[in-house]
Structure formats: structure tokens, C-alpha cells
Amino acid sequence: MSVIKPCLIFGLFLMLSCNSAKKEMSTGSISNFKSDLVLQKNVEKLKEVSQSLTNVDSFPRNVKKNKKDWDFVDAADWCSGFWPGTLWYAYESSGDKELLKEAQRFTNPLKIIAYTPALDHDIGFQLYCSYGNGYRLTGNEEYKKILLAAADTLATLYNPKAGTILSWPSQVGKFKHNTIIDNMMNLELLFWAAKNGGDQKLYDMAKSHAEKTMNYLVRKDSSIYHVGSFDQNTGEFLRGYTHQGYADESMWARGQGWGIYGFSMAYRETGDQAFLDTAIKLSEHYIKRLPKDGIPYWDFDDIKIPNAPKDASAAGVAACGLLELSQLVKDEKLKAKYINAATSYLEILSSKKYLSGNENQALLLHSTGHHPNNSEIDIPIIYADYYYMEALLRLKKINDAKS
Ligand code: GLY
Image (cartoon, rainbow, N blue to C red; front, side):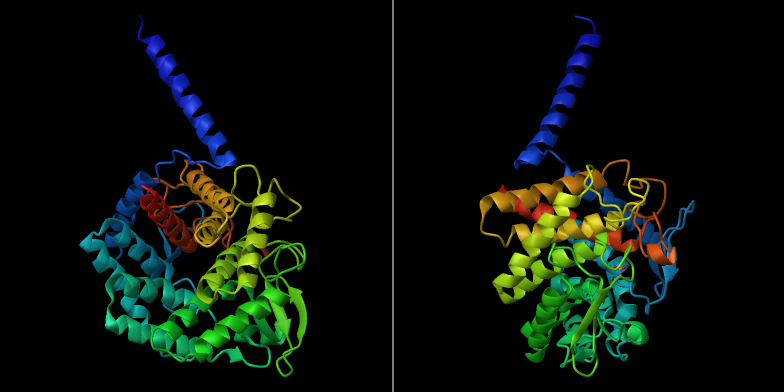
């Protein structure tokens, strides 16, 4: 037999197993995506990049077009917690003590945020991704103290009339008392604090915020307004807007992801069936409207689609949310559907098209930050890496529990 034949047969085998993996994914069984291997490679890269960074008061935020290295922001930026958070996930995944040191050295400079009057709701992203993961993994009592202070600081933005947190104090002139869908993510800090020695009112605030968001920001068709505007004095809901989406009534991809994740988490924390129903509705609508490759365009309604930029970060956020949801729904078919959907997005994100490899210091290419502002379009952004790593770890835990 010539050597060509075995090669052809092996090639055919690979083709068939890839095809059958794809088919299995859409029909509800397990793919052969090697997520552990991807996780390991990502960890190696994160360690190398982190050890090359000398200034701990600067946090990676994005990689500009045609550049290789991260651009940095200071602690006050809303994205400052994602880099230490990504390092915590790398440490969690590997147990590597050098990564623990890296995670700690980028977490510590963020302490000041917990004790500074709240600029906006982003305290949750900044501190729960950094100190929150750090406390979960180390039990460091100092971290706990800082997280409790951060929750109290975030709670100062709560307006009892509206029953929600004021997301952006700087935007009151335009949107009045505004509550954005992203803010759902930061309720986790309040729920956590209420369970860990903080005031029980933090739980009530978080629950009320989630209820108002569900009642006013989620539209009938199961898409979501980015911004809900309320009267500051009466708390009356005025109208929905967009800020980072294509149009007021369009479906901004990352916003839909924040909603899927946020309402799943709110159900986990409260047991309120309405939050679970909402998370399912949002997920079904998201999955139904995705383009073929499973990675959304930055906004589902941009009229330039298919010539519009993608948003890998939205895919990562949605994958985390769907994996969370898969552990909460009782129906086995739905559970499998959400695990398989998230697995398929992670597999695509881990392909050559989205993974940066040696191209630059980030893990993922092709995220879109604020399209209407013409900023951060189709480039690597730190929160894409953070949620991508989180989703890979979530998937690993689900798969490990099965075996
Ligand atoms: N929270 C801001 C964003 O999603 O871009």
C-alpha cells in the first residue's frame, strides 16, 4: 500500500469526525472541542505577557489596529478589573503560584475604588472581577473587607423611587435617572455582600434593580434596551434608549449577553422564577438571531450586516451566561442545548479566525467596544479575554463533573 492511501484515509477520518462533531453540536450531544488544551495554551500566554508588564498601576484595555502590545488605562477606568480577573482565572486553571503573584500584584492597586465616592456602577466590574475572584480563590480576609466596602459604595447610587441603581451619574443630563443593562452584572457584588456579612438591604436593592430592569428594559420581542430612563424624583419609567447600540430599538449584541448572564445570575441568587423565564427568553432570542458562525455582529440590526464588525466579547459573555443557565434549568434538553451552544461559540472563538496567537498580546481578536463613538472597533479588548477565560473554565467544571 502506498503512503498516500493511509494519509487520505486519515484525512477522510478527520473530515468525518469534524463534520460529525458539528452535527452532534446542533443536535444536542457533545463536541470533541479540546477546551483543556486551549485553556492551557491561553494560561501560558497570559503568564508570559503578565511577567513582561512592569507597571502595576496600568491595566491592559485594548490592542490598537496594527499594534502588537496592549494599550493601558489607570485604575479609574471601567475596564481596570478585567486584567487581574483574567489572571485569577489563569491561576485557577493552572494552580501556578507565579500566576497567583501576578493576579495579586494587579489586584492590589484597585483597593482605592472601594473607598472613593462612586463614579458609576462599574465598581462591580472593577472589584468583583479582581477582588471577587481573588477572595473566592484565596479566602483572603483583607479582600473580603474591600469587597464589602465596594458593595456599600455601589449602593450609594441606588434611587429608592426608581428602585434601581443610577448607572451613569455623568449622563443624568441626557438620560435622567438611567439604568443600563450592563448594570445587571454588578448586582452580583451586592448579592455576594448580603450573604457575607453586609447589610441585607443590599439584597433587596439588587432584587428590585433586577425586577425593574426586567419590567422596563426587556422588550416584548425578548431583545433589550441598552438604557432605561426614569424620572429622578418620581421614579416613573420614561423611555428606552441606546448608547452603544445601532439604534434605540435595535439589539446591541453585548447588551443581550449582559442580560442573559445577568438574569441567570439573578435567578441563581433569588430563586425568582420570573428571572429564570427572562434569562431563557433572552437566550432563545439570541441563539435564534445569531449568524451562522455563532459569533454576533456588534449589533444584530446594523443595516451593513454582513459587512459590519463582529463582537467576540459578546460571544464570550453570552457563553458564560448560557453555561450558568444550563446549570439552573431543570429540563435536560434545554440544559444540553445551552451547554452545546456555548461550547460551539467557544470552539469558534478558539479557531484561527478569532484567536490572536502570536499576532498580539491579547487572546482574542475582533471585539467592538463603542461603535457609535467610532471607538474600539474590531480590535482585541480585555473584557473579551476575561469572559472567554471564564467560559472555558465554566465548561471545564461542567465537563469534569460529568466524568
Ligand atoms: N459596560 C460597557 C460595555 O459593555 O461596553
